[in-house]
Length: 246
Length: 319
Figure 1: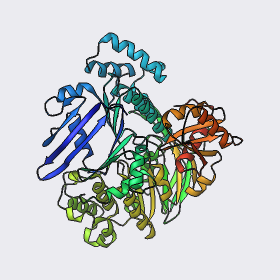
Figure 2: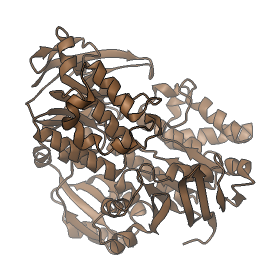
Figure 3: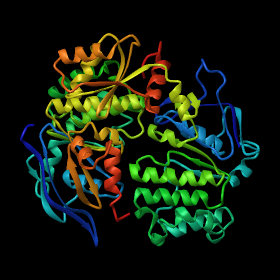
Figure 4: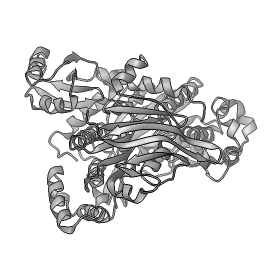
């Protein structure tokens, strides 16, 4: 295991009025790790993730992402991370190459680098014939692969994935995780939420949020052993049952 | 209770700029046919874009089919659409709640539309509604996903429908809430309700009496979950060991391996029936893998879907 810390969170808390959405969470993620960020609906995952990617300010506590302070350097964080939401965040009315060009440009990449990397990417995805295709005409599975590739196009140190596989067919879902493995082998840290418990098994480590707290954090095999569960689904159910808030 | 015969619908999708639809494949000229007896939970299972919503919208009398027939109870979906709307409860994929109204106001609204009241039907929805009743003054928009789902179900049930149509009720819902939701459906079924439900989560198939696996607008299998699994023809093995991610590539390179997919902490592979486990195990050991264990396993519905999908793609380009 490499020792470079890419995400360091200490006592991070977010309150909305009287409601504590994220309650004093502390954890670290190391470089190149696939980190599963799980929790029931309403447990506080999205709020926590929004703070880490610089979209929401914490009430108290500290966190560093890719070496930057989330309180004072949120603009630097945005430049150094990749993000893919459930809705794939591509522009449907732009062509495949135009989407790549747009996002790479936003991240400040040079035209020459963009052109070279675009060719390389399309070749790798076997997408060369689709360069001029409108994104809206692509099958769902292709869109998803493209969205992930665009999210890591600028070589971020870490990519945040918010339920990236909802609704896609089983074969595509599995191909998608193979892409995630490859990214992790290239030393891109992957921070992902999912509701598919079998996907939690692909992660190096998994945290489970309950009522705003992180109630468990370990490798899937250690969690299964600790909770005497046959799979992650059972671990999740045992933990989430303790939740008191709706 | 539900009778569907040769149903077809073809349309041009603005969103994807493509022709899509159900029952329109050239090699399947007959469209979609199936029937659901009273008191059955019938699951339509398939990924986004398979045509689940189109089918449900036709049955909910919100969309006209190009050809074919469908009857809900004794009513025809075209001729008798007004009668059907009285006897079905429909929960669309995006919960059709009014986010600026409170929990109670939403329920009251749906009751009024169906010319009834919450009081008259309280006993009927009690099991589900009581879970959210403590929050009845909260705006629907401020509810958590699991609670929105319970409210939407309460609204769909307020007029005590004979048939419940649920379009992906559990999408985006965590595993615990999903399980609770299926427990609620089971209770409704025991009360005699006919339930048509769609999902993209393959593991929910076993909660249905019968299932249809759907892809590209067609049913590729229709049976009880147990029979779908029994019909699986391949030799299916589970492979476990250290370093699973790179192992997958080496497994694929082995000639007698037909398909291989990562399933969490194991790989599911289909192999030539003549292959012996020891042969594969020796090969992987030689490649340097450790703690290898290979076992023949019973397929899950997801394995069946993968196998059926592959069959459908023979001779056709992968999309």
